[in-house]
Length: 242
Image (cartoon, rainbow, N blue to C red):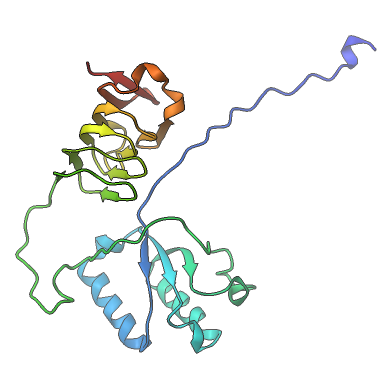
């Protein structure tokens, strides 16, 4: 066969896979619906930045028994308030089939943790005097397996170890004055300027901003050493500190 008839193989594409962790707000509507939406409106008026651009998962379990129209009314009411709906729980996929909500994710992995845009008001106490926002979170004990520490407002400082199966996520940098065996993701807010420092690297995964690396990708030379993790010209680098 003439050489000119041979097909030239297409160039290999470069597939860039990234992982990302983010905080979603879970809303669970309840009856009476008018009062629940009234409470939501007050919260949104008092803390608009808390709700702005935050992904929202809607738990419809408490109102699904009221009939097929109830979930539609709730979802339309939430969308009308400018909330960014990314997932739904507590109803079957068939109940949303044929609607514009059919594309919402039914299950999103993660752990629930309590949050409040206006601390103190729900308990009947007056809100405390406004204090300067915290820029760091100090944890003076080990982070155990299964625990998730999330602090978007700044740096996280862990005086003990981070166990395998635990995770620490920070808006700024992360400092671990002990073994880092779980997952650590810095720069959720600060972006590529954030760093991770640990006294002994035994992590499952580390990440800064949108860049991530797992243990098999940094090799045995750095295992067990004091390390810093930083972004450098679009790449994630791990450098020994000892």
